[in-house]
Length: 345
Image 1 (cartoon, rainbow, N blue to C red):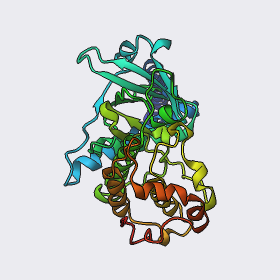
Image 2: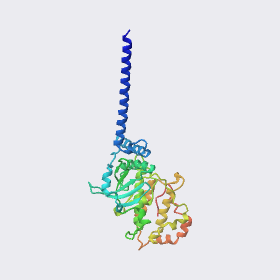
Image 3: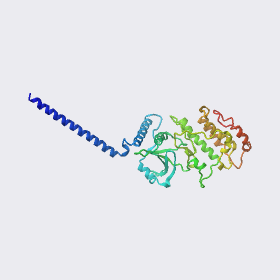
Image 4: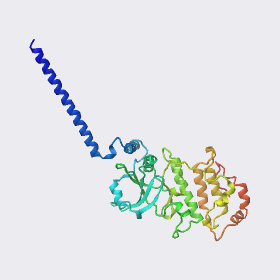
């Protein structure tokens, strides 16, 4: 019987030893966890809501990349990952002389990649804007798959820590807005023929997004500042944003007032009305009244092919100019129906 108390004391000691060991293990685990968090940087801390959001964006991007690689019919992601240090070196620490402008989601700088010498445009997204983070994921996924001469090419991206940057091919002629509304003295005026070619090229890029990409991409942010110009004034669409476009005009009687004064009257009046008629149909409030993008491409290709010589305006153009008031009252040509948009002489 004397053995039972002895065994009981032994069990108690073993229990205390086991409890102490477990407590030490838990303390060691907590210390190791804290050490790992400190080593990984402040952006890993769960108490930082911005850091959690940034991590979520990076994870979503990785998931989308895996989905694209697994699905057939694409060549996968073409965009190159960059480190933040590489982009700092490319812009010489984002030098003010390299600043190109600022959009809705961040600042854009010109840069030169150290390893290839390529001139690029680097967009640094605003880390304080949640919409900017979401836009980062959308742009990387979309632009990595888009391949068309009228779309700005995505060279690469950076998703390091809290940094979110996009690296695009550089457009030496700036944006269409620069030439229409902020033309510097050293910029030549865009004549009518160049404007029609830009419109036709932009429509081709839009057609690719809407009809050729799988799945289709609805641009929804078409404006002058998002149409960039390459050598030879080749237009390329940029910034696949989420903003909804709003109609710029509804009153057809104001059409004559919408011609750019900078053209100084050197444009075909009939061509002006045809171009505005196309634009008017694109912003119809009822979707079923809007033309197909393929029809828009056909119509703008037609206008781009009708070169205008201000030194020798056609008789038809002169008659059209003389009757502009009547056209203003009647509106654009009736031949521009939603499904019959091809111009006819």
